[in-house]
Length: 586
Image (cartoon, rainbow, N blue to C red):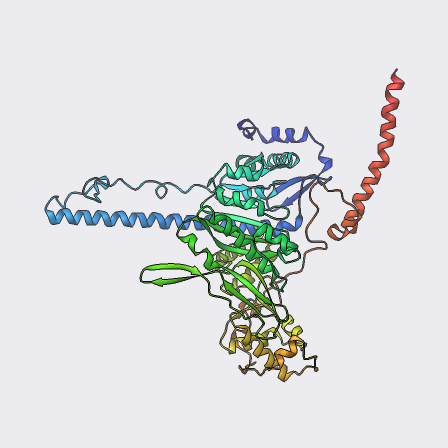
């Protein structure tokens, strides 16, 4: 937008909005503090279900800005302390040499560090005010996300909204004007290819938001280059069928990792995306630090900070692992790609030891499938999670999806951060063909055995534990002894597992920590969808037909089809009137 448009009054903007189009063709959609005009022909993509995504992003952005301020103040304090120490040392040296009078103050500019030149007063980033972070929304569509950032996140700077579709850019600019002076001053909409734009603006943005329809893989290389050091990358992937193993070869071609179809597949999808981002960052001597990684609804969303350091980048192989998944039972094992050997003050980086598993599963005797590499380091920063959750609870009225995002954040806050992937209690029992113990009983047995256990935000039935698989199966063997099963074929994996005597004698007495704090307080952690057909929607411009009933619902599809039939019936009459018009005049 030009400066002329920015100086126009609200009335002039309204007139300009109303002139080129008829408001009757649009629906006004309000989300948070932003309002957008959506055309009834589905020309620009909008999905109501992504309100969870946008609310979570706003919560993370608010925490990011507060963290930036804390880091800035800490850096300023460090520099000031360093300067005062140099000043004291210099004064003491002068006194000891008899060079100066202690009654006189030493000007800050006269501080000497090397005996030759006085050190200049502290200048630069730490003395200047912290600049508001610049945000790039690379795939803006209607611009709703950018508008919400500008209107709802305090302390945010310019928001640049991009799209390579002309109709989307026109809709975004229309919505910017529709949202008044705040949006007009902060949000800028451009028609551009996001990849080219990010490549031509290296390290210019503090925040880059990627929310594509499908895979973000084609945008990652340019995205990690456009982020300033310490900046935040927010990335969504909606191609869950690919990431969860339906098309493993496609996932490998897009993300460089092979997925496995286990119960933990959605968490593995998160870790595949993180590994892919890290791979792209490493090419430019950069690395990532995940602060929050979420699987919600029909997508995964990761929030990572990007830093530049050639030495820290060497630790990447320590954060990645291959996964061995038994085809017969639920046993899985991780194989780290790299390891380090320390000698005195030096550190050597070496390939990881392997293999971590024999050719056949030690529990059931079946073969292993191998997947990965995946990110095996923590996928959340629990300090960030606590801050985000506290902010969300303090401002609950400003989050339309408060119930959902607070439930997800609460569950994440109780996850074991250093345990990759998880087990499914129902799957364990399905392998053994036995009745399932309650989650509390199973958790108690693991805790009584001396190990940790928690839930996971990805699956209500998922359990994370640092207990090795032989301990897990011993607990299940002890459970089956008290709750016998019918005799099964000896070739089945469950029969092979139960044929072995347990080494560990499980204690099923209820442990104090068997319930998490949220469970003990009966805080809702997994909520149902707020309405039917809550999920992915059609791409913008797609023609709605009867085959889209499962996505949109019968009422919505029938309404659109009836509208099309009505328009088609009117078209011949309009054409006939046009052809008769000139004839009657002549």
